Image 1 (cartoon, rainbow, N blue to C red):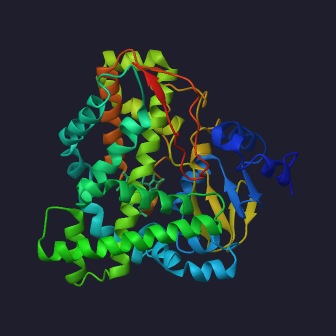
Image 2: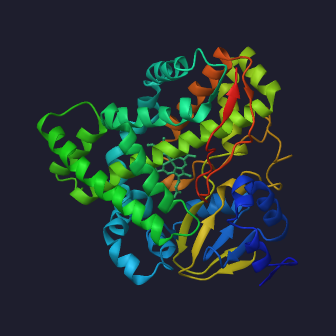
Length: 410
Ligand code: HEM
């Protein structure tokens, strides 16, 4: 297929390579210029990049969330699909991969715990956690921001909200990593399916025990609410319950970890804005919004077309898998002036980083708050903070962009 002078296979040659994962924005520039909508044979999916189209598509009820897992797993050999049936069932039970009315029922059960009001009450607790984590490197001249702060902060907060004991943090993190490596990859493989299945099985056994305890001894946490909702006839069965908790921890960890890492890199590369934040802490909300636009941790969401749909004059046939390229949309030159420039003062400060419509990120207030407290604390406590070599490297997941390490000196 010829897309404005470039063949899809030429485009595919640059997609999902190490160069792409280290700097997806060069590839997105090419797509905006030559192929804002194209079918990637490599990923077996259509990529949609323009901001307006991505924003509309995220709200479009004809683009389905159920069927996303089956479509993404379509190229896995049949025996691998059979061996990983429990994993695929668990994923299909998550509200992210459901449409109304099931999606509505599942989301209603947890939405209260994550409203802006409920989350705002956590600010001082999050500040305490950030201070505790930064105190751990008080005597160090240089440290890795990921192992020091961005890796642990979201995990500690989501475990505290769910009611998972702190001493199980490493295991929960390992399970979340296992699931993310499967759902967030550009191409699902037998290996990442196997890792994710082990993670889901282990997490399921652990959660079964914890839920029994919560039913017997209710606590002020999300797990107790879910455990009691199941008994109260809210039609949440055991598998949906376990899937919900696994979704909450995988959706809540890596995403915020990635945003804090990406945001710190962006701010330190634009030192004037880091220093400005120190002098004017009230700018923090707009700094966080620009970090979300400039280098968000989520770069793709997928949907399945329930009928033929048209984007930019290109018809995508019914049944096809569509990748809505959030990371590209946030750098669309027809939407943003100087899209590749980090500028917390821009008057076109907006993004599609948390999605749109009924699947709009449940954890957006929490992610914003954690990032705000983390960046503000770094600016206040470490005015001389600078990036140290080597250049941060990013993992090879299509959906989640996060640095493996961010070495800094204070
Ligand atoms: C920077 C951090 C985060 C980013 C960029 C992010 C991004 C997103 C996006 C783009 C979606 C939409 C999915 C779709 O349209 O299919 C989403 C959904 C979701 N997010 Fe987040 N997220 C973040 C943090 C969190 C946190 C901390 C939680 C913890 C509760 C969370 C929980 C969820 C859940 C449960 C959904 C599914 C909502 C639904 O299907 O109704 N996210 N997120």
